[in-house]
Length: 95
Length: 487
Image 1 (cartoon, each protein chain N blue to C red):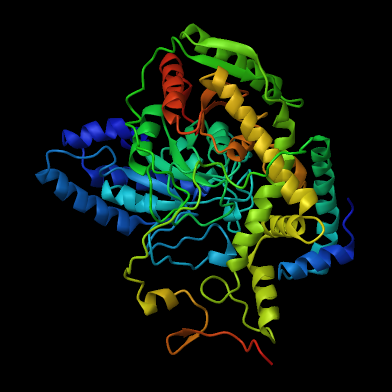
Image 2 (image 1 turned 30 degrees about the vertical axis):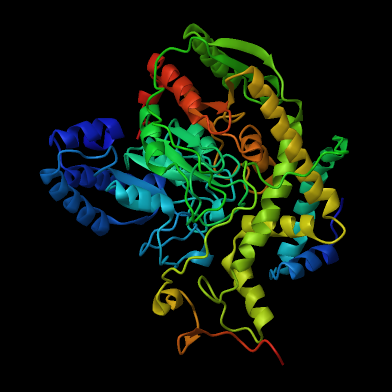
């Protein structure tokens, strides 16, 4: 599987990951090399094998819906780059 | 070097209990060691000297009036910088979290604090725990104390080096594909990856949530058991932690292996493994036999060769989803000069993440994207089922499996940095264990040309006790763990 320049750009867009031109070139080569190594999985017969999402003997973990103390607003906001009136501040999302 | 920082947990505990030393003396000894060595090895991202000394003073006051102290009381520790510490910067060795100060503690930190542990610093790692050499730290690479021109392994390289050099008495690491065991092997210390679900992941910055576990890095096996006693157990804040009772992990530390059946999976003695590593493992396995274990040299796990590909689909896929949270809004690095919200997100991630993290986000996003999901992600999940089943079957026959921790000794700094596939291959013996969710420990098992060799012991889910039993018996019969790097 060879990844083209356009495919790399498209994946980066899906991931909202800015890349320099040099990075796009490099990833096109490196990711192609890595994907080639994944071809080996085609050898494995997985007919009727269920997928594993996890390994612990647990399913549907529930808990009581108890009211608990939340973190103070100033502590939650302390690590934000932009804030205003006790809110996180972001650029306009709707035009 | 002063002798205090060379103590193990159990030795230091005895001295503290008899009031032969104080926690302040012990803490100062480790801080002095940090001061002497950091310019050479670069194991730490943050040193918390003031906080540590204050905590140690409090502990000493407590010890004065207390008859019973717990094994970790007053003992200095280093914490991998992927584990959240309230009020102490937690960077994941990433520019993205360079100034992030968590408002809460991870559950393991709460548990250590309940035992009155003294945290002296946070250790360097591959950015977001993605890497096998600690060279992917955004700040600086950590150096192997056995040969400063070599890598310490990764991603918990800083924690392994901190313990190998006696900068602290014990450390915590995290292991997603070998990140505790491989650096433990490269640095000649003990490192345990517990069963998935045994130790709470609450407050562990997520890399691949179905694979990540926190575990101890220590100077000997007894210490490993003591740290497990402190950190293991169910946590309602981690819905994947399992509510099984926690045993006393020291109760099976006996120097005799009679009645134990150990399998040696041939697939782990891979092509391209160093002949010195193979020779050291054969000697070590011979020793296990002398100690009474029944060895089957012909155990087989035929799906092992597919584990690497499955892992490097599953782990990056989970990572690409987990790391979507870094958008520069609520915390972390935030690019300020973009014209709209999408550009802000893209630039924040472009300048906040390093090359390996970007590579894995790309790989994971691709494997999960429309048209490729079935061929990559779903296929890898099915292979995961087969690998898990194969281990389950093996453990019907054997109490444990033994293999090398890594196919080679520590490689040179820079050697694999530009070739990601070669770097990934250095995890080939450790990552099947995370895929299956089982526990495994790496212990010192020899040297080749002055470089440490690790032996990996794998066990049944939630049977860390048998691993510690085998590791302890081997340790008692050898003295590899007593050797110190030539610094």
